[in-house]
Amino acid sequence: DSGVTQTPKHLITATGQRVTLRCSPRSGDLSVYWYQQSLDQGLQFLIQYYNGEERAKGNILERFSAQQFPDLHSELNLSSLELGDSALYFCASSVESGYGYTFGSGTRLTVV
Amino acid sequence: TQLLEQSPQFLSIQEGENLTVYCNSSSVFSSLQWYRQEPGEGPVLLVTVVTGGEVKKLKRLTFQFGDARKDSSLHITAAQTGDTGLYLCAVNYNFNKFYFGSGTKLNVKP
Image 1 (cartoon, chains in turn cyan, blue):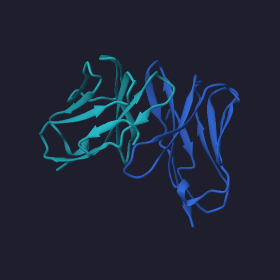
Image 2 (spheres, chains in turn cyan, green):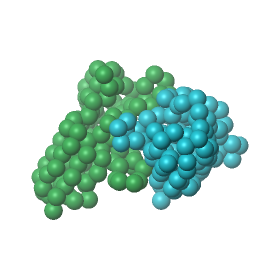
Image 3 (tube, one colour):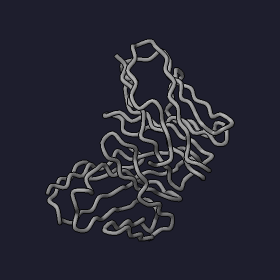
Image 4 (cartoon, chains in turn blue, brown):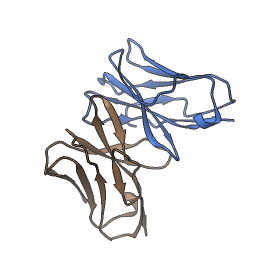
């Protein structure tokens, strides 16, 4: 157990739908990062939050949004889902940027 | 052009053999991390290197950061089947943007 908790572990949904992925960071970590991993794209950085504030944005689509709550858990919202959004979505947390992250075990999203 | 180039992409070896995988870039980084990822799981941090020329050892794994802080290598001595996995290097570039290489998929056969 890495200390980073992601739910749900698996999610199957239809095109056009909206889903929410949840992440609880490791105790004491203020930064939360979201990554998408697909077979042809590798691990792609989506977005970072630090203590409730958006800190950095990567290749996150406009259909995707995220937030970090006062208790530091984070949610990634994916809307108007397309087949190409099928992927593993990972959350990671860290105390400070640049010194390595602790990853959760991911949510496998399948859009049918 | 990828920010980080990892080589080789795939490596299949027998248990007991030694191997080296590489992570190269034309950019300079303040730090670099190595991770191992097993199928269906999140990457697990192995090491962070910070200083040019730094060498870190983790049991049979030896990590080196290039003198110019543009590249890194991971050497495994006497590989075991438990070393099988995807080895990823990652950097923090352009202030808080994080990039992972595409990885080296290692298969250690018994």
